Length: 367
Ligand code: AOF
Ligand code: ZN
Image (cartoon, rainbow, N blue to C red; front, side, top):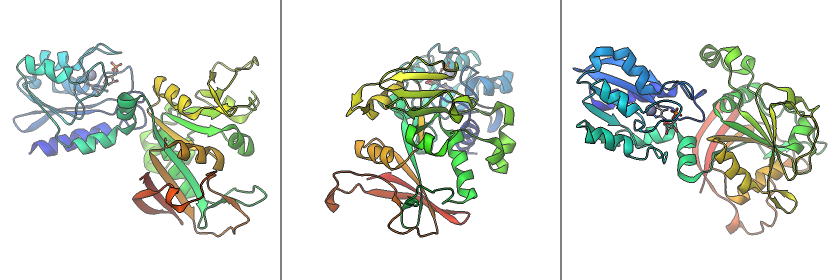
């Protein structure tokens, strides 16, 4: 078997961690001796052993003289766990093939360098594109300090999100909403605004009963990780009575000033600088990055959606279009105040188009 096949297997193993590893990256490892896989592992949860450690445990003595394929450079630092490069050396690994370097400043080439200095045959770059894709959030946060931002939109064929009265439940199908649950489950945090939370009494949770059957098999209902709920609440309109406050997992209220009500321990108020008496979005994203949010899934109304697009902080758009027409009295998808020339209209590139139940899902990246 070739290097590519073993690395493809390591990537497949890494993907098993996509719902659980945040704030850590998804990493897979395969140990091969005489052309045969003798150890496999993937990183499951932050604080638990890294992929290499699981794979070495499975390989035992057979790791001596073997090759390790890893989807990310083995770490060289003491974090929540000891350095993987020490574990690989102690086990007698002779060759390490990494898909890419780890941009974490605590590692950043030192893992591979240490292995090379110890006489291990080291290389990196094999299937790098796939490895990059696997950890878009972690990698962006390590490189820029900002989370990877995905903006979800749901609309009719004519780009409308509600009737003039505000009636909006439901425009997209149950299948589309299940698909949204899957994206929520992968995210470190979900961002919304107090306007949306108040209008829909939204809970912003992942609900096991609403996941697809294959995901339900993979994730136990009682160990489901809830993404952090982040609500922009510039005017302190959210109260402890709102439904989302008492859901499992944390809620962070992004505010200009904290209030002194009694909140459950799972609720944190974040004080942020103001722009036009509103929470400054760029400062909020920076703070979320500092608090180790890798991927941010945004579900909000036309105002926040427009602000994020105008601030140029959106990395990907996920749009569900329902085959319905609501007419031009209905509410639009996003506010873009000040936009008057076609030449200034934000443009996108389609990266994926598919049908989800009766709806269409479009994935786009900003141009
Ligand atoms: C690896 N293999 O499977 C993972 C790595 O706090 P710790 O000890 O879990 O360290 C977290 C950092 O280690 C994380 O930020 C990233 O740089 C690296 N993750 N490295 O060699 C793995 N998950
Ligand atoms: Zn490690």
